[in-house]
Each structure stands twice: as structure tokens, then as C-alpha cells.
Image (cartoon, rainbow, N blue to C red; front, side, top):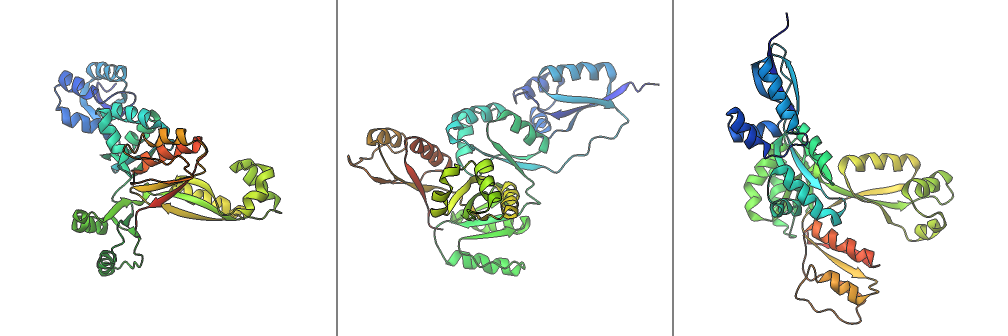
Length: 357
């Protein structure tokens, strides 16, 4: 005999927008806030032990609204809930920031300027305590890299902001009582969740540290050396990395050079293994979070340069014969990368000047 009672499960938010929660809450007499939580924590139960006819109609309605759902017999085990994750976004192409802001605003159901504020505050954590299905869905709907971190299982890094030696020593002493040895006065890595929470509660008001999940860390990989006479290495650099074959000697003479500008920790580990197996001598360097200033050289067209820079710095005066320019104030990373990309288009060479760590 067929089971006449069904359980309707939301698999993911799919192509639906958060506004769907209010429509469904009103239609099915469900608490709105509870339903929003269910959408972002899919898979989640929408109807349990519902008559088949009602469940079928509800399933059809939800699918029409863009949700991914499935039906199962009421006596079947419910899907196992995965541990919640926090979601951050990294914009690989800074020129796409306006587009990404729009996409994120639609997904979150907020205003574009609110979405932009989230993106500018790197690491750009946009959702907390949601399911991996939500992270996977967001990745399909946004032109940026989505990074999911299980905060309780991740490790954390402390980044010191102002060169104060007393605070690092104080935190090092605290960590020692937890069995963690740390010597650096710039960053301390591999701190477990509970210890990281204790440090954040004690020191967040000082505004002298940044504490973040290590899953959000970005790296650049620098090529320090290679063998010009090794055909495997040179073929890899030309075929896989895209270096011009006739420029390899010049590149060799000007080492080190950056192979990867900004990649996440997993990508960095994978690429370092590949590079090492080929015989390339490379070094991964963590990219600090927070604001920084840029310096520009090789300014060929002063008028074009001025037009770009004044989008970011209003009340500044530029010299007519400008060969080198230093930004007067630090900017958030996303805005700086947006500025850098535009200046590189007109031939400028850019270096970064991070705040004292």
C-alpha cells in the first residue's frame, strides 16, 4: 500500500529570492523569520506528515518560485543536517564590484549599498550560520569566489595592526597558558576556535587586531628561481603559466616574480605541490587584511592618471611632470584593487604599502 503521507523538504534556495519567504509565510501561516532561517539552512523540512495531495501542490508551488525541493514518504528518515558554515566572498575581478553588489543584494534581500558595505569589509563575511547548500547556491549566482568556513573547526589568525609590541607579547603569554607557542609580532596562526573566541572577547575593543578564519586568508605565490635549461620547467612556465617563450631569459634575470596574485589557502597548497614537483622554487606569502596605500610609477599619461585617481581621492593636487605617486591615505582592499586595475590599464606599475603590522 502506498504511503499517503509525505514530507516536503527544501533542498536549496535555488533561483528564488529572499522575498519568497514572506509570500510563503503568509500562504502557509508560517513564522517569517523561521522560514528565512529554513531557506538558508537547507536541506530543511517545509511540511511533515502532509497528505500527498497537499504536499504535491506545495511542492509544485515552491518549484515554480525557484526553490529546489523533493518529496519523500513520511516514514523515511529525514536528511542529516550538516554543520553550519559562515560564508565570505572574494571578488577576483575588482572591476566587477558593482555587478557583484547587485547580485549579492538580490540573494540577501538587502539594498545594494548594504551589500557593498559587506564586500568592502574584507574578509567579506556575508552570511553566518547557514548550510553548505546555501554556499553552493550562492556560488552559482554570483561573479565572485565564495568561501565557506565551519567556524568551530577552522583555525584562526591574529593580525596585529599598529606595530605595538606590548599587545603581541600579552597575547603570546595568554596563548602559552593554552599550550600554544607563538613568537611573531606581526601575525599568529593556527589558533583553535575556542581560544580565538576568548582572545576576540578580550581584545576586540582595542581595534589593534584583526582575527579571521584561516579559510579566508589569501596568498600570492612568488617564483624565486627556475632552471632555464630544464625543458620541463620552461615548458610549464610558457604553456601553463603563459609566460612568453622569448621573454624567459629576461624574466629569469628579474626574479622574483609573482605567479599567482591572490588565491585561497587550498589553491595555494595545491599549486605549491605542483610547482615543487616540477622543480620550481616558489614561496607562498600571506596577503594581509586591512587597508593599505599604493604607489604608482611609469605614469605615461598624467591627464588620464589624474582622472582615475580623483575618483578615489577628491581634494588632491598632482604635479604636471609626475613620475611617481604615493596615495595620501589607505583604502580598503577591494577599492585599492579597483584603483590598481585601472592604473595598470594605462601602463602604471603598482606597489603596495601595508599599514605597520
